[in-house]
Length: 306
Ligand SMILES: NC(=O)c1ccc[n+]([C@@H]2O[C@H](COP(=O)([O-])OP(=O)(O)OC[C@H]3O[C@@H](n4cnc5c(N)ncnc54)[C@H](O)[C@@H]3O)[C@@H](O)[C@H]2O)c1
Image (tube, rainbow, N blue to C red; front, top):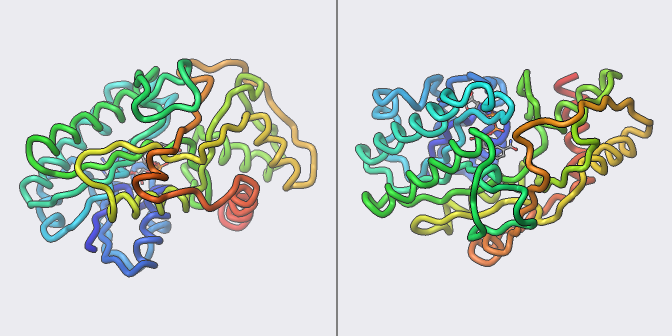
């Protein structure tokens, strides 16, 4: 297959690109490097530094593409609370520019990096795709809004759209400089001997899924997904944040200094996936458990980031 990966220089995109190249697919990457890194992009791909908001560039690279993996976007919940319009512009409107360019170039399928932030984490856990949605922060709303656009582009123009609602992704290549994601923040702090900031005293339940499992889910979606369909992608198991901290302590073999940051707005209490649908329809299930995944992530941070 000939694939275009938007956001292929980012954390998840770069892991997906590697998997696609390993499976001998032909891959093109477009990334404006706003939060990604050129060094993370596999050497086997053709790389375009540019934005998905540039229809001229898209018109040049889209013809002949079988599937677009759309991962480009802004993904920090706290910044979306201070800059909602910027998030809607990039995650929604720029995605429409991409869909329009696909329509024009005759590209018939998109696999999209949607988010667990589509759900209201206060209502039900674990949460399934047909449970009530209701984002509680602008980031979640911008991601969900684009799912609706994909539905419209499938029913109106025949562009198939598989939206994957990733839960909490962790693993190698998560190098965002100002990341507010817990695991990279904690690992950087722990390895530098600084206090590890944590919220809500760690009493939030999350569903952590290793990035290679997410990459595999994207590939399965491209190969087996049909029409317009939404899938949760998570481990299917909830873990308290405080227990992740304890696991990191255990792997590093020492007690860590914690910094209680209190509460934080925009944070759901629960985000745990019901993964029955993706298991049944795409035959996907996670292969990397949390301890193995954390060990591999710590090794990566020790070698590449610290
Ligand atoms: N990391 C998670 O836990 C998680 C969970 C749910 C969903 N997602 C979604 O997965 C996708 C990838 O997230 P990530 O964690 O790899 O983040 P990331 O910031 O590492 O990757 C995003 C990439 O998109 C690029 N980009 C942003 N706007 C662009 C534009 N207009 N044109 C071209 N490139 C652009 C950035 O430079 C970056 O390389 C995002 O869409 C995010 O919303 C991530």
